[in-house]
Length: 122
Image 1 (tube, rainbow, N blue to C red):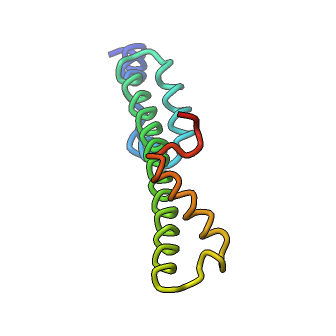
Image 2 (tube, helix red, strand yellow):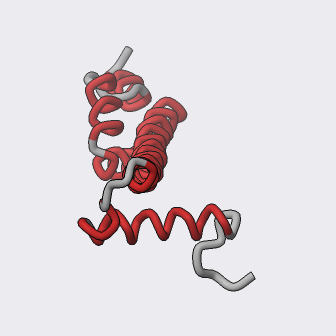
C-alpha cells in the first residue's frame, strides 16, 4: 500500500475519539452541530455518517431539554394550583398571602376551563 492509499483509508474513517465526540455532541449540543456540519461536508461515507450521528445527538439533546423544561413548567403550575386548592379547602389564606400563588392558580384554572386555550382567540 502506498502513501496515497494509506491517507485515503485514514481519511475515510471517523476520528479516533469518536465516542468522546458523541458524548460531547450530546452534552454540548452546539459542539455537536458544529462537528456535524464539519464532517457532513467532508468526502466519504464513514465521515458523513459520523457527522450525521453528531448532529442527531445534538438535536436529540435539544429536544429532550425542551420536553423536560415543559414538564417542569407544567408540574410547577400544577403544584401551585394544588397548593391554593388545599389552602382554600382547609381555611388557609394562601391566595391573599402570596400573590404569585394566586396568579399562577388563576392562570391554571383559566387554561383548564378553556381547554388549553390560554389567551389566543378561538
